[in-house]
Image 1 (cartoon, rainbow, N blue to C red):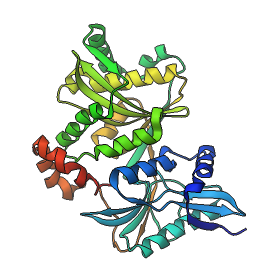
Image 2 (spheres, rainbow, N blue to C red; image 1 turned 60 degrees about the vertical axis):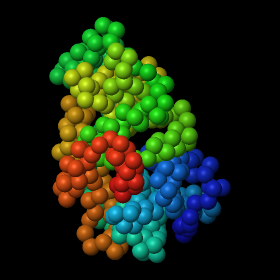
Image 3 (cartoon, rainbow, N blue to C red; image 1 turned 30 degrees about the horizontal axis):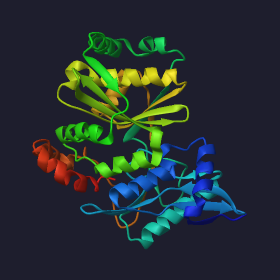
Length: 347
């Protein structure tokens, strides 16, 4: 039977979610709620595709049409995410969805089409697997086994954080507001030389995912020093956005955050700790290995349309080095004002 690919309609949402929920390769970023939050937070249009055989869904492909003010047009699955790509029940459907995405890219005159994961894309796409890695690991079954689960050197840092907690100076609140988290997060990104996303994107994530999104704050002597936005998924916990101030490293606030999240995940019966994706060779990549997580390659597929070379739309790109250096020195009031507009370019 032939595969029919078309734009997903609002009436497809329930069937899309059922298909994704049942698919072993589905990620948070195949959820239409992510696409909706991107549209609400960044103002970009969704071009989500759905495939059917004999009237039954055989595949889905979330797509965002990115019209970046500085870097041009692209189609990305999934935008502002570390995953996405084609979900399909068979190779023919996967190829049909990817081919339609590339055709759509030509219709929209984009620079390229990028599929961040999912099934193989077929002709017209270049596969990359050497730039990013993903990290996940099964948690122990008991909370009192977590310390021994953590490698010795990192465990020593966690114990220092727990000593501060035992002194009554550390506490974690898991009911922080988006405003409280964003205040810490945007400053942390400024210090790293990266513009922060619009706050309305985080608000949209909370609106879409509800209790599946948790914002937690570490307080030292009742003052916030670090914050974490986490996704609670079925049998999986994903610490996704994290930020801290200049005091956090000496206080081991990051170690405290991640240890506490692991402990609470085990207590809730969650088995997988998903540490997300990091650029190979970056400090974030190294940090995750220090926690005992082994990297797995991330496969992305790029279909060039107007572009003649593979994109490197990443703040770590050496050609952005001067901007990163300048941004680190930008006064907060300016960074907070123009940062969200600049962040729209880094989908």
